[in-house]
Image 1 (cartoon, helix red, strand yellow):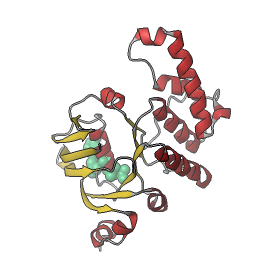
Image 2 (cartoon, helix red, strand yellow; image 1 turned 30 degrees about the vertical axis):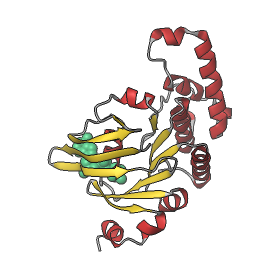
Image 3 (cartoon, protein in one colour; image 1 turned 90 degrees about the horizontal axis):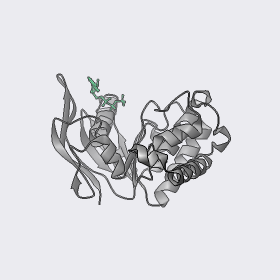
Length: 242
Ligand SMILES: Nc1ncnc2c1ncn2[C@@H]1O[C@H](COP(=O)(O)OP(=O)(O)OP(=O)(O)O)[C@@H](O)[C@H]1O
């Protein structure tokens, strides 16, 4: 079952940020969402994940209409996401950030020691998985920007999402960490997780993704394999204005 939108629309004043966007993402694959600055990618992400209410249109996930579902319930349904500008708590340690990321929805859940122990073990193993276990007790603000992105990814993984939406994972990240983020996406995808990645780094998009959706002015103008969209004249026109 896939994530799909139908005629999704969101305006801010006179600007149609997302304009009747009908998109189907491929389950089990790495999907990329690309497009020029201001083409509506982040707003589209925000609509899909319940952070912004669309004006009209629908989003369906695994056959269910989630258009009006609150963000925390969409997250619980299995869609995790990261943000263009990392969302972490700078004064908490890396480990504490992960524990906060899975804060139990009610107080009772937070007080159950077994649950706390499981979360702690999971948080430690995820820090190890993303390669920053040595920074577990460092304040998040002391991590490099790339390390903060890895921490945010670990936070997303705490909820064990089946679908992971990443907003510009490569933005501002040095080449070594970029490679690690790419490798992690591949590994996590091989384990069966679906990815939807907004990214401006074309080398990363082309090497990582199976399926590419190109946005221009709030709607898809091309979809296909990296090679297919690269050869599409509409894509060249959108990017270069030729
Ligand atoms: N909260 C907001 N209020 C007003 N206008 C907004 C808001 N959010 C986005 N927009 C406008 O909507 C359009 C799409 O913006 P959006 O950030 O979704 O594009 P994007 O493709 O993610 O851009 P980028 O690649 O630069 O991150 C832009 O014209 C932007 O200025």
